[in-house]
Amino acid sequence: MHPLPPRSAAAATSLIALVALVCVVLGAGRVLGPVLEGRGWFFDIDVDREAETAPPPTQASQTPPAPPDPGSGHLAATVLLVLAILVGIAVLVLVIWVLRRARTLRSARRPEAEAGDAEAELLEVEDAHRALARARESLEYAATPRDAIIDAWLALERGIAEAGIVRRPEQTTTEYVVTVLRDIDLPDSDLRILAGLYGRALFDDRAADAEAFDEGTRSSARRALERLADRLQEVTAR
Image 1 (tube, rainbow, N blue to C red):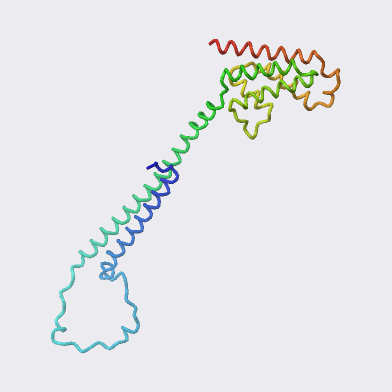
Image 2 (image 1 turned 120 degrees about the horizontal axis):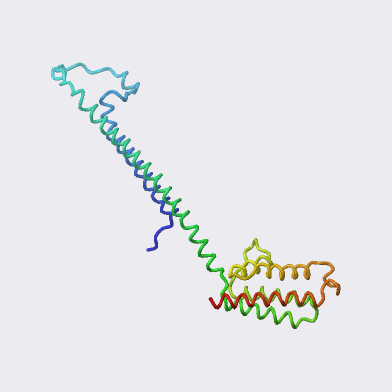
C-alpha cells in the first residue's frame, strides 16, 4: 500500500479528529444530560402537563422521599465536563500539529525536487561535443555567412534538444542554448558572441546586406566555436 501524500494524510487525520470530537461532545451530552437535568439545569416547560390536575395523594405518596445527595451529581457533572473539554483541546492540538507537519514536509520536498530537476537538465559532455561538432560543420557548409551563423546556432539547439534537455516555457531559444552550455562550464563570453551574431542574422533588417555579414562574421563565429570546443576538452580532461 502506497503512503498517502502529506496533504491527503492531513485531511484524513483532520476528518478523524473532527469525528472524534463530535463523538466526545455527543457522548458527554448524553451522560451529562440526565445529571444536569436532575440538578435543575434543564427545565421542563410542557404547558399541557403543568395544567393537568395532580391525583389525590395516597397513603404511600404522603411519605416524603429521601433527599438526593446534593454533591454527588454536581461533582460527576463537573468531572465529565472537564474531561470533555480536555479531549476537545487535545483533538484541536492534534489537528493543528498535523497541518503544520504537512506544510513542513511540502516545504522540505520542494528544494529536493528543484535540485533533482537541475541535475536532470545538465548536458552530458559527449552530447556537448556532438552539438559543437555539428555547429562547426554547419558553419562551414552554408553558402553565405548569414546562413552559416543561423545554421550553426540551430545545430547547437538541435543537439541539446536531442540530448533530452527540455526548454522551459519562459526561455527563449537563445537563453535555452546559452544556459545549458554555460551550466557545463563553457565560457559565457563566447556563447554571447554566438548568440549576438545569431540574433543579428535572424532579426536585423540589414542581415541580407553583404556589408553587414561577410566572411569576417563567419570567422568570428568559427573562433568562438573553437574556443568552446577547447574549453570542453579541458572540462573532459578533469
